[in-house]
Amino acid sequence: MCGIVGYSGIRPAAPILLEGLKRLEYRGYDSAGISVGHEGKLTVVKKKGKIKKLREAVPPKIQGVYGIGHTRWATHGQVNDENAHPHSDQSGNITICHNGIIENFNILKSKLLEEGYIFVSETDSEVIAHLVSKFYDGDLEQAVKTALGLLEGTYGILCMHADEPGRIIGARNGSPLVLGIGEGEMFLASDVTAMMAYTKHVVYIEDGEVVDVTPEGYHTSDLNNRTISKKIQHISWELDEIEKDGYETFMLKEIFEQPRSITRGMRGRLDKENGAAHLGGLNLTSQELLNIERIKIIAAGTSFHAGLVAAHLLESLARIPCTAELASEVRYRNPIVEKNSLYFAVSQSGETADTLYAMRELKRKGARVLGICNVVGSTIARESDGGVYIHSGPEIAVASTKAFTSQLTAFYLFTVIMARMRHLSLKDGMVFVRELGEIPSIIEKVLEKDSEIKILAKKYAGAKDFLFMGRGINYPVALEGALKLKEISYIHAEGYSAAEIKHGPIALINEETPSMFLIPNDELREKTISNMKEIKARKGPVIALAVDGDSEVGDVADDVIYIPRTHDLLYPLVMVVPLQLFSYHCARELGRDVDQPRNLAKSVTVE
Ligand code: F6R
Image (cartoon, helix red, strand yellow):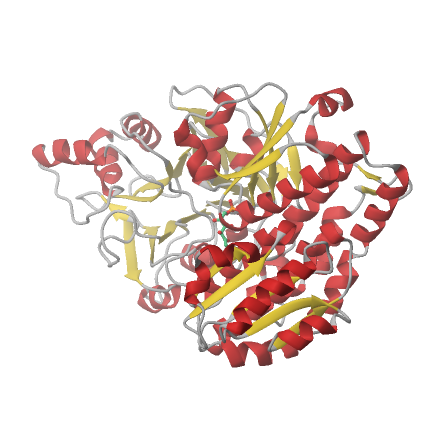
């Protein structure tokens, strides 16, 4: 969602801030701005729209070696220049950027208005600038701390004062903030991608912490001025991973990266000899793993769909009762935490507010929650009791693709561990692990169908509505196919269990409403083919995803995308890839902004 960047050092700040904001574009935003300090004056430039417009508005000769910047995703107030950040106090001596939501801003604003402060935006964030101004008496850090003491809600904040050149105060409560350490220069951002071009040495600021930054160094403390010593960490991601590398979009690059990202997620974790797997970060002894009687998965969006596949998988292979639930629903229904149950919070970004708050609620009730995350050092990863990093590499496109298959990979590994401790024999474990290890090369073969899928997408991109049907472990994949299509092409799409359509959705079928059927060669194949015939009988166009050689499906469907055979329980990893490509090409055909679809943000840090 919103992004913040800060720089204090020796180089001109504006290009570094603009570059940092550009790197944060993928998170989704609707306006952007920067503030740069020079000779006792802070200049603010902010614009509704894309960074390109901001870049054009920034005076080419702007001077100053320190500054802050922001990409806004509107929550309070319209999308316009005034509501964009940075916000200033009345004198223009103080500027702030804020991610998050100040829940008590109305009360604070009324008081400030009574005291004569003049507001120029409709945002909740502007109160922070006025509060800092009210408390400022020569020490910016102290003024920020006093102001923060009055705020309720979430924030990642950067603040500067014209009278304190080179100094930036950062603070965090619920919205990420990272400090990057360079040589005689410091970087601040909500996300490491904004600073990776300059430094890989970072310090993750935690909730309740304030960081006082100058080009020479930094000091971290809490709101009560107690010093907090921090560990410097090293980012393992490479710069080329956050660049398009010759692909027309990040999404296409990430779809094509899947054979490698899945391989990375399995590296050192597959134990072919013992038909088993290792996951170092679970923080559970064998006895504790054996004692688990129930597993519950919480997540949102695509990660939730990965959780649904995992629930089916864990029950089928490991015979452990398992359910997946939307994190947004868990928090508010006063969840019951049962003895011997294990929870997973699944999140690519590790910052999704719905998932994070549900996880905290479960932990408050005594649950043991493991994280399945991509972003190292993210809040969910840090607050969980252990877990698995999926090692998918940075996912820049808003629509999640490679993270989904990597999340599934992590769950396949975990399931093998659990299954081998219970009912799965050495022989069957070896077969399963071998087939799991072959998935990257199977996906390579599916990716070779890209141009064939592109032609199909051209044929169907004009549809107003689309249905996706799957059964069993592939039902969540149908949900994911529908989500992908709607979020990037804006075609209305729904996913159903193929068996369920006769209970209502079949009423939607006509010549103009195509259906995508997922038909692996498993025990539900024949029943799914019957469901497909029901659609054909009502003149609904049908595309099928079927296994190589399945001519019966070819006889019924209008179009078929054939995929290689794999283990019955591994089809989700393979089936989702043509669905990602199909959505991608439909969206391109319709001229959509695939990497940054309208109204969406990469990391949804508000409830
Ligand atoms: C869909 C998509 C979203 C996310 C959801 C959860 O393509 O990207 O549905 O999956 O917002 O995000 P994470 O996994 O970061 O918690």
